[in-house]
Image (cartoon, rainbow, N blue to C red; front, side, top):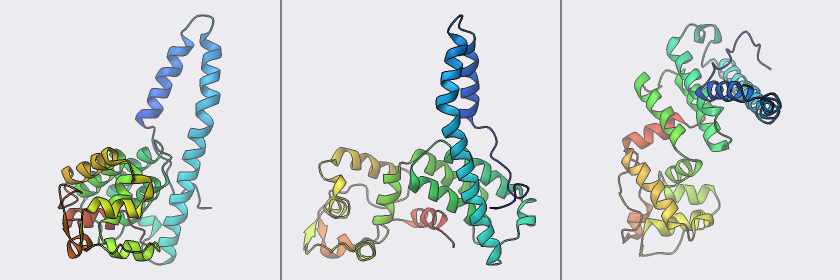
Length: 232
């Protein structure tokens, strides 16, 4: 386990502040306030602390691996304000979610932020904000349409024998959970398009077999996916 001296714990998030406010409010209620505080504390504090510890261990171990590969030097990272900003921002987001795809994306964002090819500071801040507002399905669908044929091959899914069709058919074949959930995945795709990560505004435009195989991420989408991919 990494030394606690090497890795600074995340600062209090807005959620932590909200917890303190609620706790104070409950305590002010006559007669029931004290017991309500204890109930709230017993329900909320343990899982929050568990998340915090698991997150710190995950990030710390991954940073240690980067150092072992001579990608970074921990002592230098301590003095890098941009890196510390990224750690604090990503940590606050990580403590507010239990979605593993988002947590892994945030961990990878921290790791990539300290490498030479990292995006500039403003883009990093923007990308972490995107992770915060996205669901895990935003990330999964974006990865799928970055290279549909490769995704099918890597996930042992047979590519359909289609001469024409819509991207929605590719999505529903890749993820059976999306069948019958058009309104849900249309909202996700709209988010990705409005955020400037994909170059096609609809999943329902009929296109050729060749068109179905093409990458739908644009340059910003490619940069985002690279930023949240593991460098290890």
